Length: 156
Image 1 (tube, rainbow, N blue to C red):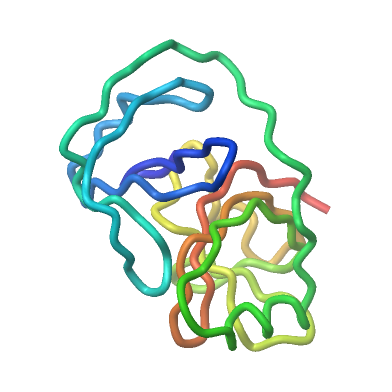
Image 2: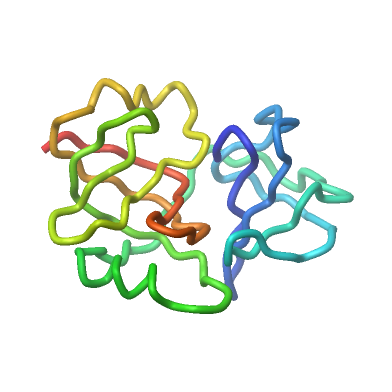
């Protein structure tokens, strides 16, 4: 979940359900929902932009995330250099956040991992300059950065 929507995952794939600035956080982690809308993409990431219907099927109180793919500098460079639509993937990476947007610098690459509309509850700025490990879903690829929705931050 982020301030602009949420990741919807089923047995086949994950997709960003994007609301722009209008997302009110109505659906939480672990909720089972049914979504209808036009599938498209933005910055090489699959999404449903402004879904036509989102229906809560069942309240959830937890979710077991998949084993994260570990992203090191070479994996980040490969992801940034790839072409075509990304496969939204749950990942883990270690680096140092800083700057205006608290982008994470991973040693060995100039491609930043960029928090995507992170909820205030993560207090991302408090980690600036300190090495952290993040877990989340990478969702889009832009020149010089990979945007992701964070699920967990651990101070090293």
